[in-house]
Image (cartoon, rainbow, N blue to C red):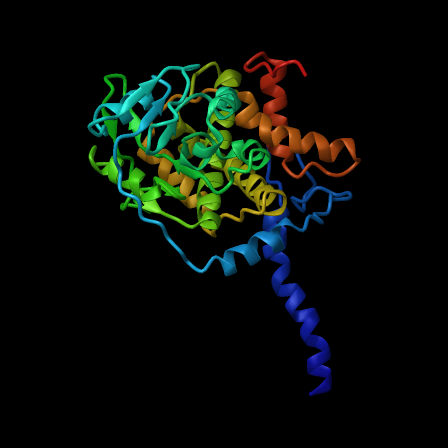
Length: 343
């Protein structure tokens, strides 16, 4: 019996090894080849931040308190496609559109939907009266989290949208064969008001707690970055522009390891571990909007976000945790497919 107990840790380690290797494996690349093991050799930067423990304890102590505020007259900041949709098909009697730079009325009561590009986010926050901070609703990428933390707005309502606004301003709710109920999600004080507003345009949306929302938003962000950089680069190399459907159909050998690398980094650096089945869910979404062209844009808030993490690891003589993504992004930079802003 004692010998069996001594052997148990070794057996457990052998059982867990494939799972660990799966997270660290870096797959085969058309741009480079890794060792036969599929795992890059060398030191890895260890994660020693206390935030995961703190955030998990906050999640456990949250108590499940949910505030259900009904939708009503709201302020819409930004008159682009999203702002116009919130004001039009989803609109509520008494909604007001604010153009960029217009002051937020101090006497207005209700949600304040922030529909400006992420680069303009800080200007909106600076112009907001302090007593209205918690009414701001953010529709941007989850990579705005550092801005929200700096401004003590990490608990604010956020929306991770999967619906599509076509060239004729029609709203299309995107569902997949894995998630037929819809994918759009929200969190925070005005979350239920967001659900009601989207429902007026027959768009689905679900309410999540902060932890699960962060995981869902990062998952969407991984999709944006992986599919578009692979499609843009391989389209350039072949001379034939690619769609996200093409990437899902023809480039899975590149796509799967890149998604795993980004998922690993999300788990270890961003304290947001996507649930199992990530590759399948993201591929299902690509199939649902298969004709979408691959393009590289919003460097700072998309691929540049992950690329910066890689550069930090490399500058400290550690392995790149997202080597495949870095190779693709570097090719895109070298070929002028995207131009990072000058520091």
